[in-house]
Length: 381
Image (cartoon, rainbow, N blue to C red; front, side, top):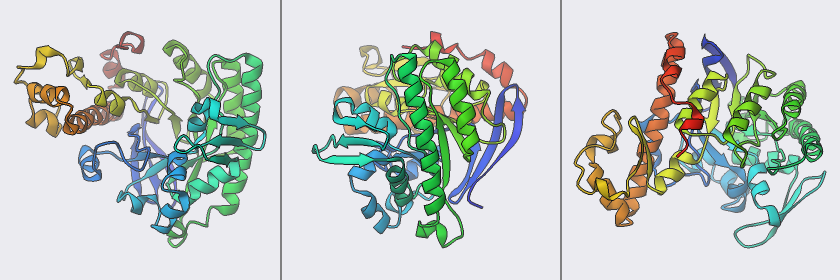
């Protein structure tokens, strides 16, 4: 069995389930740490396993540029390459190409862009992006889409949405014709899984239409993309609500690129099953840590003599072993270990939050759990 999704419990709109991939099962709702270059920055894979990370996200654009799809393929695929025997999801590179702005040109055929590394010229079409993802070998791969800028006019957003829908069909057509070409899946009679992406900017009518028409193409799962690109958080929530009610109940729903610990809980309440975000790792590198007592900036001088744990309610090894004073010393001294330990804790906080959310759904206590979580608009630092 290559992919299958089952819902095990519901509490309101929130769902607890699991999906099955060639590299293992994933319990949902799930938070996926981002391993852009086949690594979660500063954290070895055995530590990720100890934290209970179920699935990672890799970035097709970056791995395509370095070390290259063919190199990864020759080395046995991204799982073997990065010594990670668990599920991996790869994005299509659409968002990264979008972020290049002045280094890209979008046409109906695809996107011509210049590498941010050396300025060399490249081209992604729906077909070549999916080919790259097949070559890398992640369990779940994404259709190629255009992530539109914010703000954008309704007409511009509709044109982009229409092209993304055409690209979605082309992505699926290519995938269906080539899905058995990855040897380490084919030899076991398995394949990768392709998800579609809902776009539509910040317009509820376009989000609704995009969701309905993407579902009509028929993918194994559906992502809501193009959010958290500068729009107000309240508008992000509105767009999620506009799209998610038109996504199938029996397939996983993936919200791309969000959010704070409080936000991910509220997105679960809206019916989201999968999420990813750079925030826990990026914030850690800047000394911003998430705790059960609120957010903490470890570089603050008030922690210089603090012998207490980072978070007395956290069970991660960082909180069990090191004091706030030591963590503050490492960060103030610009020690590399500071980034590693901070990242481990933030990931542990996110993973534990998702675990507690899942247990609350299964036990029928999610509404009570949610009532104790601060509204996302009040939790932004």
